[in-house]
Amino acid sequence: MALVPVEGILMGEAQTDIQTDPLLNVFSDIYDKTKLGENKKVKLYHSTFEGGQLLVESCGYLAPSQYATPWQEKQAKRSVAATLQYIGIDTSIKAIGAYAKKMEISDSEYKRLTNNLLKNYCSKNITIFSLRNLEQSFQHYFQNPRMEMIPSVESSPFATNMVKTSTEKEAARSREFDQVIKNFRAFCSWGGEVEDYRMLTPYLNNRYIMSFVFKNMSGVQDQMVGKEQKIKLVPDDSTVQVACTDLICRKENLTTFRQKFPLSVGSTGVSTDLAKLYCHHFRFQNEPQGTIPEVKAWIKAQEIEDPIFETSQFISLMTGMPDLFFGIDSYQDMPLLLRSSVDERWNLWAKQVLNSFSKDMLYEEALKVKVVPRTDRVALATKGFEVDLSVTMGEMDRMMQDHDKLGLTFELKLTKNYMRSLKTKWHALAQEVDLEGQKKLKEDVARYIDIQLRDKSKYFTQRMWNEDFSRLVAEELINQSLIYRGPIFDSYQEEVLKVPVRFSYGLFALSYLRYKADAASGRLKLNL
Image 1 (cartoon, helix red, strand yellow):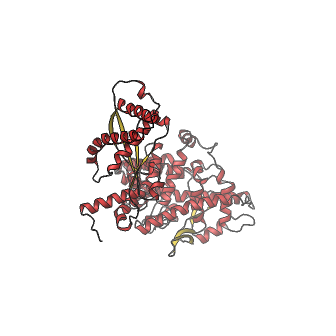
Image 2 (image 1 turned 90 degrees about the vertical axis):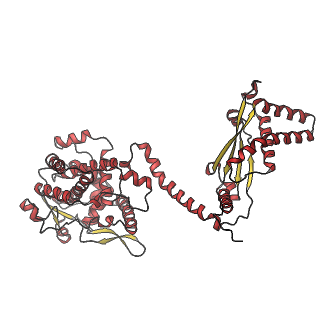
Image 3 (image 1 turned 180 degrees about the horizontal axis):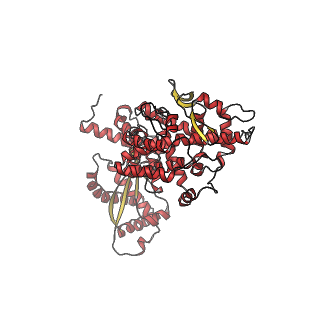
């Protein structure tokens, strides 16, 4: 069923047996849900934004167009706005029918909704559709919904699970439905006057929407062609053109449209004239000041971001890509949603690498556990005693920052007076230059610490240290006690200190430990 055959306009009714949908193929490429189709949809989405950017860039070198008469200039502007109105009303009616079905609105509620839309939002001077034709089209697309009109990435291999969940939830669809209704209000509000575009202004000055409209008026569309899967402009008979004579606007075929559309003086073609009209007229359209009271009330009730959301939803209907803003409950959620694209792909890659790492990696370097000395007196005084251990395998692990490594922590329990005694004894031995005494002190501390370390070994499926490990920890604790200048030693009251021992594992070290675990458990067959 079409919205606008000439028969329907003249007779005030829609004849479903003789009409075909004139916009059936305008957005057809975004409805293919196969992997190749989703790839095409992403490329077309990108091309939509490239087209808008190129349109704005052309404003840097295109001079204003001059027409033979003011009447011709008005007719050209009116044809542009009417083509946008035609595409917009047709698209929004189909989308309203689909969303209503999606939201499970009853027949009576839908009838009441559409009656209110036609009664309260549509100009009485609209000429490209009859109001009766619009009413019948609303009912047709509710009974025969085009569900593919609803923007979705549910079947896309390029969208993350978080994005899919966010954009497919009921709250997101409800917000989109509200915006689609506002889309219809904007498109149906215009009555053909170029001095008052009413609610069309944010659409007329939107570079991406107007680039799409101009491609239709020029008889071309973006299509992915060739094995290279590149997007190119190709001639397309299914494009939409509306020509106007005074205030009467009708959809025409491309040949008739080119005969009726007024060209500027010295014109080099329709495409250039359209770009000039955007750059020097539509681009600077603001909210109308001398419009009718109803439109003034709508504009006054808007928030500053409402026109942006409206046009964004219409771009979603054009491209099949949902606006992520409608799936979030607050602006603070957007960074997390955007970051999911990086996080999910990184996690997927990391899991795949870990599953195959031990098969491909030659472990030529030894696993190293190294104490990271804490020499920052301020950090030591504020955070207290702590032993940092770096577990690495190769240069790549050693180059990684701590926040890029996996952390594991357990605690040693040492008394405050014990830590003070380490400082006191070491100073005494140093003054006497007793090297043997210092060595014996290290061994005594290491044996004391080793008692607790043996108890912590139950947390490790693979032993992470040998006999020298306790000595390394003992030396680090003695060094920290010597440079410590905090409040812990101000009193002699007995107090137990919890000293964290933190391991930071590099990626290659983790892979090696998994390899050893798989080999020990029999999950991995060793081929020697």
